[in-house]
Each structure stands twice: as structure tokens, then as C-alpha cells.
Image (cartoon, rainbow, N blue to C red; front, side, top):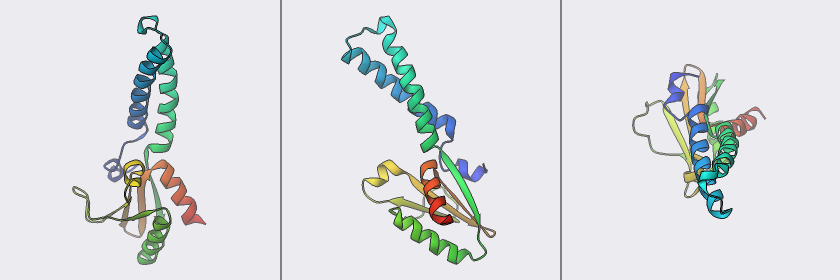
Length: 147
């Protein structure tokens, strides 16, 4: 993974920890309330641990930031095709993001979709196009571009 991608989002470990901690805490709290089991028994924490591990694994797999690179002999044509595929997925170009290089194009969904889907970052350099986003979006975009 290049240094450029790391600035766009968290990898597997950070994403796993986020989902694990949040889910384990909520599950432990809800289990103790809903099942009327006191925390001192340790059962709510064990349930929280199991559910947290599962949620952390899924969250890390689907929502970590990954990148995908393609060669582009005709960069303008490639960017036009990419714009079309991203538009089909509900993404559109946004204003330049603060703190990012000038050669980074940022795409995001509008309205409510923006809150849950994240952004897609496209870097065009030296005959290649590098796309970075959540793993689930990159997998889908890769299939669309290879078709």
C-alpha cells in the first residue's frame, strides 16, 4: 500500500478496532438490560466479545481503505469512463478537499448517502490511475471497469 493511500482512510486494524469496540460495548450494555443479567456474572461481556469480534471482522473486511491501480495510456478517456461508472454508482465530483494534493480528485454521494458510504479518491499520475476508498466500493468499481 502506498503512502498516498494511508492519508485517505484507515486500514484493516483501525477499522476492526472501531467496529469491535463499539459493538462489544453496545452488545454488553444491551445484553445486561434486555436479558436482565448483571455485569458481575461476566456473561454480557462474553456475549459482547463474541459479537464484537464478528462485527469487527465484517467491518474491517468491507470498510477498510484499499487502493486499486490501473494503467492508462489515454488518461482523459480513462477519467471520462471512470466518471461515468462512478455516476452510475451515485458518486459525483466534489470541490477540492482541504489538505490533499492538487492531483487528487474526490467523489462522494449526495445527501444521506454521503453519511454512510464514504468518499472515493482518484489519483492520476504517470500513465496510471489509482483509486482509493472503502473495500466494498473498490471491489464493485473494479468489476464495473473490467467488464
